[in-house]
Image (cartoon, rainbow, N blue to C red; front, top):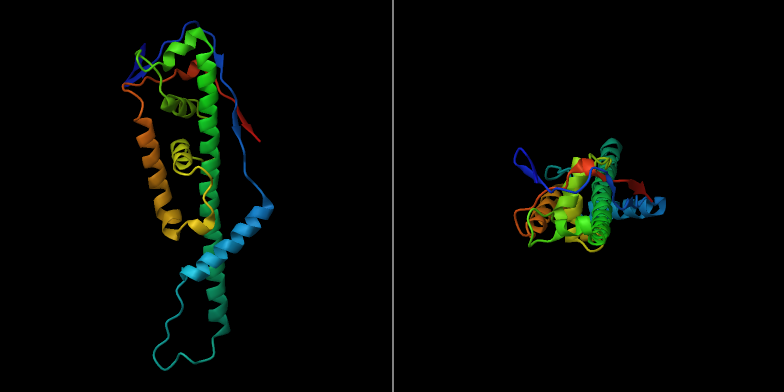
Length: 213
């Protein structure tokens, strides 16, 4: 077992780098879906009154609406809808990454289990051993290009939702403030489920390939 700072790494026989199964990412991009999501976002903005109306003093409510004010109000609603869509699509992108990572971990476990030199590393009754969260840490150690996706949050999002949540089911409070905290808490709870202590997988001993579908 190698110890670097406060981190402990499992020892793997040999010196060769080992190929892990590819991490298959579905980008989830669909122009037709984006059009539907934009329509739903506009309905949410309208229904939830996310853009406050201009409050006129008493006695002025029946005055003709100023075209410039009306145009500015509609523009603000459109900007809010676009912001809502961008935030929601970020959530969906994290979910897809999390879904792919959990499936990749399952494939890695099958690979480890089929090799006598790696099988013991996943046995919780033998220490040092690696847990399922060790594969998530390995992706971070390998500096996998996620395009801005936070790996732990992505896994937490997938642990929280079996399917991508539809926009109509998400409150604006969840999208703007709560989803990141909820996903990170889910990941940390999941990571602590493995028997401690857990050792890390040495990143220099593994090849990880990301394939975008």
